[in-house]
Image (cartoon, rainbow, N blue to C red; front, side, top):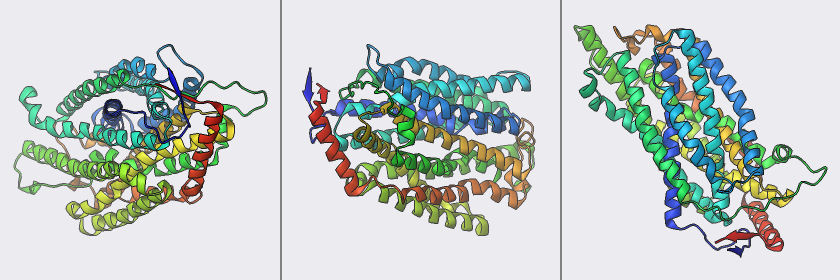
Length: 504
């Protein structure tokens, strides 16, 4: 059964249960993605102690493949429909493989370094490919769950709140594990303990995240799937439609330039190891065991400070987005918050350099992290607006390809963070294997102050510059204000004339 729709009418379609189930699915997805994006660089570099050049090359080549894989997956999803639906089946079929590969990333197999490099490369690239199979259709669902533009924006903003909660949960578990794990393994220091921590963390995150993610499949309805359109000889291809859509290209440029925003989360553990030490005077400690324990506690404290700043700043912004998106233009909201984040990063950098006082930096780090929540929510909502524009101009709606653009932005950001960290290690010239071992953990105080500050810049100056750069394309973005309203009205009229229907 179906009803005639006016395309972007005032009628609402998504019930509270459906909204919550989709949002909890987003929460589960956020947990699993954070397990990879926030921890894999530390795990590869400091735990497995893989060569820096290898990790850098792996991340770069994987992103080159993603540049092909993500749009390709979008085209596949847009062109095909299964008897179980157009988007939902990918959630169900891909989830088990994502779960298995996520755990395999962190099991620390006993292999020679060359074999370990091959193993890590295969698992990492396979994870990215399978994750794309689920991610692209999942974030296309708001386009088909309702034809109402305002309701679609609400679905996006509300689900992004819970996606952010999911992204923060691995950090909460990571913080709790040192209080629980020693009861079972008998120690809380050394490389083997760190490996065990990551293994337990990965398994816990995967179990909870997968259950939440898969559960969404059973509660989502694809009720506004556009009818298939016949290809007309000589008309632009799917990819050409995307690349010739100026508003969409500006969103993609903004997303890529904002990649440094992920640094506060991704580089937190590295900064905690090598930029700051918080604890008793190490010269007063009489044993290596006591020094190791003090350094381990310092790393945990510093990392928690950065991660909590990221969580509070990002989550605080995300939770306000449903209201802000109703009251303010997306473009102005994005530009304002990004420029505020840039200014805050300058203060963070100056305070960190002149005082070396991490606690004094906290208010400004919080402000720096606000654009994380804003960009994560607005970028996908603005991509959906671009899909409206493309549908109006071309008659085609490439939902999955639009979602693939968002996935590519996120993966590029994750890769930039990881590669930036690796490049900084190489730039300041020290070897992680000499800093972390079972026998002795070297504290940040043994590094030169310039090395400390170079690592600190990963979470201060680098994200700030990224915020400044990403605001530039937005000044040329015209799909906002009255222009956006006009597009929505014309699309609604076009759909009405074409008899677009919405399933009950």
